[in-house]
Length: 226
Picture 1 (cartoon, rainbow, N blue to C red):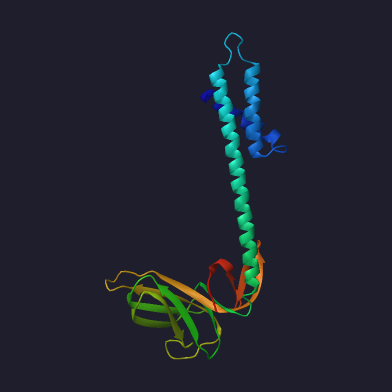
Picture 2 (cartoon, rainbow, N blue to C red):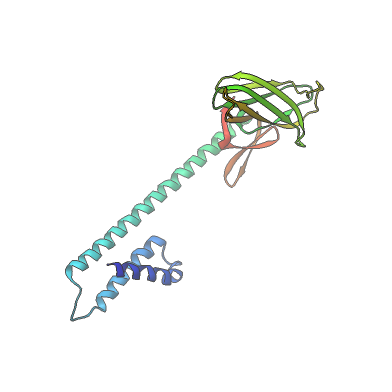
C-alpha cells in the first residue's frame, strides 16, 4: 500500500502540467488514483494476481480520498461565500458613516489653529504615572503632558493646542505617544486612538477605507461610531 501511495505522488507530479488545464486539483487527484489502479490491474502478474482483500482496501482508500476532496471543496465554497457576504455588508455599512464621528486605532489627529484636540487612549491596567508626548508633522516634540493615578480603561485628555511654553500652535496634523507605569514601575500597555469626522469612503481592493479629516482609516480599525 505504501508503494502505491508513493507511485500516486510521483504520477501527480509528472502529470500536473498536462492535466491542469482540463481538471481541477481535486479531480486530478481522483482521476490519477483511479487511472493508476486500472493500470495496476492490467499489468498484474497472472501467476500472482491482486488479492481481493488488497483490491477492496485500495477501493476503500479511493472512496475515502474522494469524500475528503468533496468535503474540502464544500468547505472552501462556504468560506468564500461568507467572505463575500461580509465584504458586501461592510461596504454597505461604510457608506452610512459619512458625516459621522468615528474612533479608530491610531495616534494621529488634526489640530485647527486656536482650538483644542481630544487625545484618546486605553490603559491595560491602572497607572501610577503616565506621560503624553505630542509631535508635529516633522516629528518634533512640541508638548509633554504628565498625568498620575489613572485607572484601567479608556481615557480622553483635551490638549489645548499649545506648546510647552504656552504658545498656540498652527493647525496641522499631529501625533502622540504615551508611556505609562504601574505602582511597581512596570510598563503598562497603552492603546492609542484617533477620531474625526468621515468625509468620504474609498475602496482599495474591494475593501472600504474611510477618509477622516484628510487621513485614511481602514474600516476594520474602527472601534466606535458617534
